[in-house]
Image 1 (cartoon, rainbow, N blue to C red):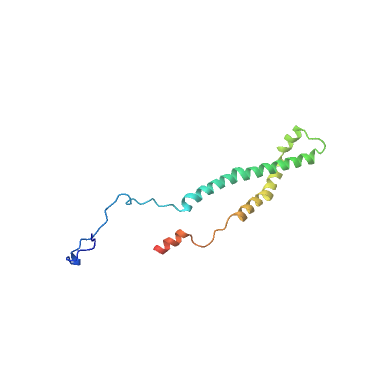
Image 2: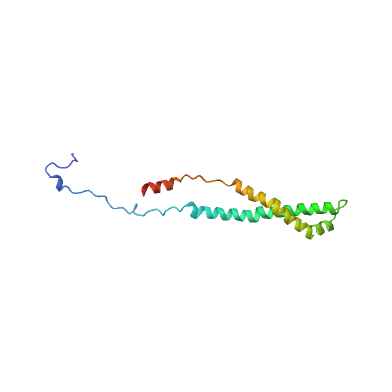
Length: 136
C-alpha cells in the first residue's frame, strides 16, 4: 500500500490536511501569580506577628524581670519575700528602668539582628523574567 500523493493529480489540487479539534487542550491553565503577589505578603504577616507577639513581648518581659530582680537585690539584699517582689515589680523606678534598658539595650539588638540576618536578593533577573523578556 502506497501512502504518497497520487502522481496523476497536480499539486495544486491536493486537499489540505487539518487537525481534528479537541476540547482537551482548548482551556488554558490559570496563570501562576508572582511570589510578590501571593507568597511574600503571607510571609511578611507571619513574621510581623511573630516579631510583635513573640520577640517583642518576650524581650520586654525578660527585661522587666531582670530589672525587678535587680531592684530587689539593691533594696533588700538580706531577705526576699513575696511582698518585696510585688512592691519592686510594680515600682515606678523599676518600670522606668525596664523601659530604658529595653529601648536602648534590647530593641537595637533586635533591629540589628533583623537587618543583618535578612537575605540580600541578587540583582540578577529570575528565569521567568528572562523568559518573558525573550518572548517580547
